[in-house]
Structure formats: C-alpha cells, structure tokens
Length: 443
Image (cartoon, rainbow, N blue to C red):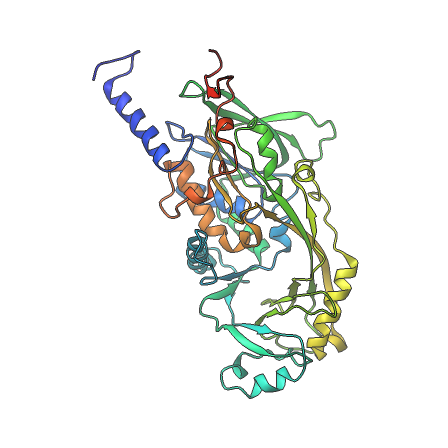
C-alpha cells in the first residue's frame, strides 16, 4: 500500500475493513470513530433502555441525552401490562428477543431494585360456567387458581406455571433506569429534524445535531443538541423520521389505540393472588381479556376490544401523543366481563384508573432496529408491537452494541433492517441521482 491523499496504508485498510463489516451485517452506515455525543429520542421503556445500556458501556467522556416530548413513560410504557414470556415466541427472528430479554429482566430487577418484578403462573380461561369448580378440584390447576377467580367461567387450562412467565410495571423500570444512570441527561422536547454534514463516503451524510422544540416553549423556536449519533426510539411516532432522513427509509407504521383499566385492591382483602389470565373471546361483551394482578394489589386489564387504527399520516403529526383517552364504552364492557368472572370485584370492585395507549405496528410485525442507510450515526429502534416492554432489555443491549461497537453481537439485527420496506433506488444518501444511481451532491 502507498499513501494516498495524505492517508497511510493502515488508515486505508481500517476504513475498508469497517465498510466491509458494515455491508456484511446489513448496516448501511457507520461512523468511523467512537461517538461522543449520543441523543436517544423517546423516553419510553425502549428508548430509556437504549440510553441505559449505552451509559453502562460508553466511556465516561461520552454525553448521552434522552429527548422525550412529554415525560418518561408517558405513553404505552406508563399504561402497558408489562407481561413477558420467555418461550412464547413463534420461532421467528423475534424469538431471540423474547429469550434474551426475559433472562436479562431477572438480573435487571436485582440491579435496579424493582419491586414490581415477579414470576407468576398463567391460566387460559374460556367464557362459560362451572369452570372454577372443576379447576379447583384438579390437582395441577387447583394450586394455580387465584382467590378472586370465583365467578362464572368455562374451561380453564394452564399456559405457564411461573418458570418462564413474569411481569413488570414498566413505569418503575423506566424511572429506576434513569436514577441508576444519572449521566443520562433527560431533556423534555419534541424532535423536529436533524442537521448533517458530508459523511466519510461521497454520497453519505453524517449526523451533527438533533433539532427540537422545548416543551412548554410557546414560541416553538427550534433548538439544537450537538450529536454525532442518534437513536430514534419514539414508539409509533418514530415514523416521522422518514422526513428527517429525506426518504432514505420508508417506515410503514400503524398505531393501534387500545383501552385498559386498573382495579383497586378490594377493601378487606389481604392478598390478591398472583395468577395471570388470558381469556377467550367473550361475545357478550366483545372482549378477550388479559388479566394481570400486580404486587401492589391492583389488577390490570387489557384485551378490551374496540381498538382504533391510527394511520401513519396522523402519527407523523403527533396524534394522541399529548392526550390518549380511554373508550368509555369499552371500559364498561371490560368491567362487566371481568365482574362475571369475579364475585369479589362484582360486589366491592372499584376502578383505580382508565386509560389508553398505542402499539406501534409495522406491517410484518417485526421491529425496526438498525442503521439508517446513507446517514452515519443514525439508528432506529421502534415498532415493537405489543412486546415493546417485554423486549426492552434485549433491544437496549443490542442497540447499544450497534451504536458503540458498530454491530450487535447479542442479537442478529438483519431481519429488523429499518430499510426493508424502502425501494432500493431510494435508499441512502440525499444526493441527486443519475439513471437511478446515487452520485453524491454533485455529478
């Protein structure tokens, strides 16, 4: 090798090796030096987990900013059930996320002192009658039957005995991750774009700053956060990044807006037994309840039915980011359905709160996790559907590895390529094209 354009042969070999690794792992872009200023967009459990694992791994001189539009765990992470199941994957590429995250949560619970984490058994419950009496007489089912399941239900069977099913209250996890890693700077504001400069390749750009408007600033003045790396992890609203990256990625996304309710602990009840229920379709009420008793004695219900489907065009405009109210008719239906199953709650049950949130759903039910093509230092971690809470530790670890080391060694991210729905001709770069090929800023 010989020196070319002032660079040594060693530099040429290193650059070539980096680009080769990037191509091999379907990573469209990669910064050629370690990041110093990292911005994570989205303060839910996914974004917080990314920031947390980056903070644990990054050198001390790296700054980490978590940009959140409202408050930590303001959306689904503050209103989700927090159920996880290690072996409930379907053999698809997301199976690894189930397994790794489940194992990590047990360690994370100790590390953070999470009071809401616990393993618990799970029952499948069909609508009907006399199911409770039969189940209590069964030698295997009897010990799993919760004290509050004493009403009218049909067939009952075991879905899990507590070895590979668990729960967490996600808000607690978010808050305690931020408390554990004080170097994460929480900034309240909404991302509105990015600033870039010429990248290491002719047609590439590199991140230099994240543009945002501060929460509570009525002037809507755009401000800048210096950044050489950014991770978009804003749930269903992550699809707005299509515009920030000028078409380098297409991010099909639908928000599924669903209602959930939380019951107070009944007066006079010392314990609310820890058994979760997955209920069959109840045509009387239009529900398929999921029932999660929590360590604080409350019971969380989702699977209420009547979800609304929010298109990408509305999500880009921030639909339901500030306010996401419960559907009152579905609250009533879920309450009545559950009270048929539990005489305790039929007699003395009182709702603690009603709420709604959105699941971010790509069309193939796989998350977007990886690099943005043509933009060095740009990454996406979004679209985790109903498993965003359950997968959070694994996703945080994988994305931290990708940002800091150039590839994820804990999870194969190839199936989750953010550019998988992007037409090949539109991928990467913002330069003009000639005959469908990227040609940089100038021909």
